[in-house]
Amino acid sequence: MPDINIKYLAKKLKLAPSTVSRALNDSYEISQATKERVRALADSLNYHPNPYARSLREQKSKTIAVIIPERINNFFGQVIDGIEDITQQHGYHLLIYNTREEVETERRIVSYLLNGRVDAIVMSISGQASDIDHLKSIHQKGRPLIFFDRICPEIPTTKYITNDYESGYNATSHLIAKGCRKIFFLQLSQELSIGKERLRGYQEALNANGIPFEKDWIVPCSHSDEENIQLLSDILYQLDRPDGILAAVEKLAIATYHAVGKTGLNIPHDVKLVSFSNMKIAELLAPPLTTISQPAYEIGSECAKQLMAKLKNQKPALEDKVITLPSQLTIRESSGG
Image 1 (cartoon, helix red, strand yellow):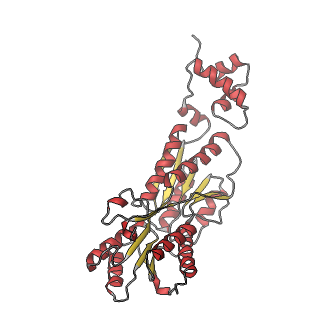
Image 2: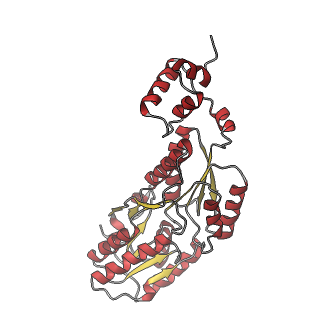
Image 3: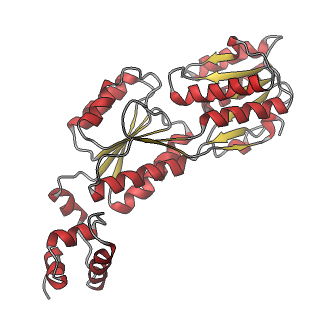
């Protein structure tokens, strides 16, 4: 019995070994008819390419780096699940890096990756990132890069986001429809594109409903849960406290629950609450939390599909475009739903 390898398949099919190899890798350079011929013979002979030998020949690590700003947020965990489910099908594995919202940590991670062996990078940027030279270096060195959620518009590559402006507008309109007239916006970062768009939607919903906006309704929060709980407790203790709250990220919704508990108030009777959140236990909170949920798994899956098409088919540079996948408003008791 001869050794079943690419050369053997090529001889049987009267094709070049390089053509057989590209066909098995689903290359866009090979016609669908040829791919089907090659796969049919490979299947009949029970031939499966050795992914490790192939990666050594191609000088690839079969590794994708995923850089996220925090692990505790449910959104990022679901994005990683979406990426991994696709990359595993193609023999790739993930390396996960957490910047902890620190731009210096983000720079060190990027430097390490550019000096090492990863085939591509998927990332959501730190909330502190204003100097983007380290991000430009990824693109300049030709390393495939995709942004999601927290994107860097200046880098010409594919970016996945959700409809943050529309979601902020709809959430605020919902609170207004429930009788709120003094709605506070809890913000984690003033620099992030997602925060800016959510804030813009919030402000325009107030304006469209004839509610005068005041600057102190925007509450800048920190990454410290204890500091946020104390800040929100101080706000809720006041006589002119808000009757509605829109939290830009889920950790600020949790801080609001704690602050309300400290002040002896009641959600939704005293203050109604909506949050951007992908918490799977949102409906188990007391009261259940009204959420704007991003299509996290789908975003991860689409990022991975784009990268696999790029890496496996040797296609040109990733297209410079922004792809929007819509979020979903789920109304529960915390907003009077």
